[in-house]
Image (tube, rainbow, N blue to C red; front, side, top):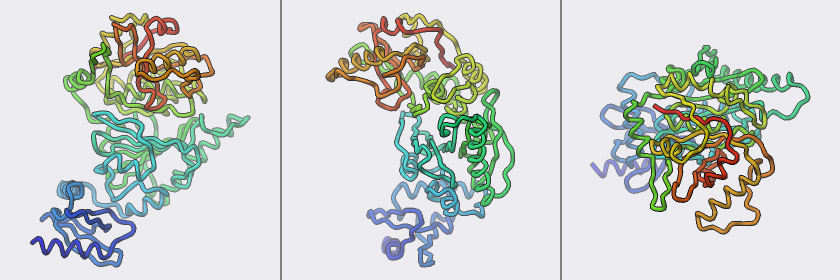
Length: 457
């Protein structure tokens, strides 16, 4: 039996395909080949570049390949959708990037997908991970310049992909608002026409609830829903997600209140120095557009297992190019989204009393905090954090953000406290290195204004 398997893998190694999936046997030898057929007896028919086919047993390969084949076989036996006439190679050629390595994205490891798409890891928690890139128009997808790409995954596998082709914050400066709207519409319609050329006429569908509801064009391809959203004068974006999730208007699978409470409690870390901190809050980098509010809300929503997109949040809350978001509009826009996912949005007093902060942090609930950010405050936060970490406090210790030179309204998350040192931990949506900074309570009170918000079960 082993001799037969060895012969099969040797044949594979002798004739590889330039566009196929990678296969590795138990001896560590790797080859590339296309899948022709997955059989119920747990063998797979593979095709080489020269057209020759060979049948190989699943257990010839390493565990990752076996898992892929077993998932594909289960999908086949469950009667799930037949393969689309447009192949995954043709889809990659249409997109101009390697989105797919076969006809089913949802069993791919998130990190491997991100590497194919040349995205940097933005965040990884015990429950999810996300990757993001800001090509800012220097890269084309579907023949159109793309400004932002984002990839979301669960504990292991890819769950959704988002591409923003043009949005109000990225459009080249123009004296005419109408010309900006025209540019965005032209971008979206070009993507629309590219997809029609391969997948045919789409159907109209909706995504989201209430103020967050979008009308989209939808194409289905091999259990992938391709959802193109063109919001007049705001943005053109394509989202790819499992068809089952698109059928639920983009909502994820429900997690029970009991399971969520247990998860939140498990995220509270108590350190020997008295720090109490919430772990596992995903990071979302607001990028160059000043979207601190939409990015902060997306982080909290995703932490609570509510799918969210900062561009849609920015649209619903009237975020202007370069920043500036109405807190009232954001609260009103997200209320129905939060309630439809079985959660509750609550406004709490903004007095920043240690006991009040502790009440929520101890339950694993971050706090959305609004304050007047100044260069002096940011330098103080950097210096305090550096001293805590035993690092040298540099004379010029800027955060590398616009807040270093500007004074304006800002929002971030309060994620921890230390009653002994009289400090709170804050987390800004500026990328991983700003996931945890510390400031004294009295300094935070000095700049704080308005009420705060939490999302709970």
